[in-house]
Amino acid sequence: ATALVDAGATSPVANLVSNQGAGASAEALANAIQLLLALGSGGGQSMAKVQAAVRDANAIPALTQLMSSADGPVRSAAMRAVSELSSGDARSTEVLRESGGVVLLSESLLSPDEQTALQAVSTIAQMSASSAHVQAIVDNGCLGPLLQLLTHRSAAVRQEAELAFSNLARPGAI
Image (cartoon, rainbow, N blue to C red; front, side, top):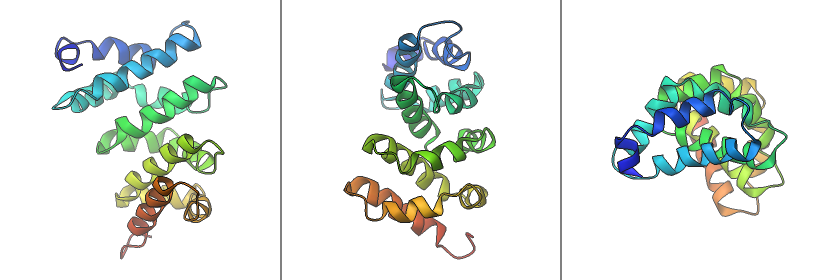
């Protein structure tokens, strides 16, 4: 994956995602999103390069829209991409917030699909670490669902909810 990133494969894929497949099938779009994630998993600077390409292609708003896709694989891939590609990247997280992603994440927190709930709560937990995003988390109705996740059957989901509350409870956060 690192060699593909170094060869410049990330930008065309990010542009395809940004254009929401430009007429491609839902399967092809889901595969393009999965490819972005695979390129970012190469270690070293791969994730930073993929994040930069996603930002440059303005793909975060497109991924945010795709989080509400009627196509399950596209929706799941977009949710995972938003979670992983915005992790640790303040600019991408800001774009996610500005493009309405917090509303969609809030709606996904109580998903019956454990993976969807985990991706949503992980992204909210990451966002809660920044005081710039705390008010958006509160304003978009995340606190109630986060509270419910503290008793979720999945330990991973509970841990992410605990992290989010820990971040939100720090002095001056709210």
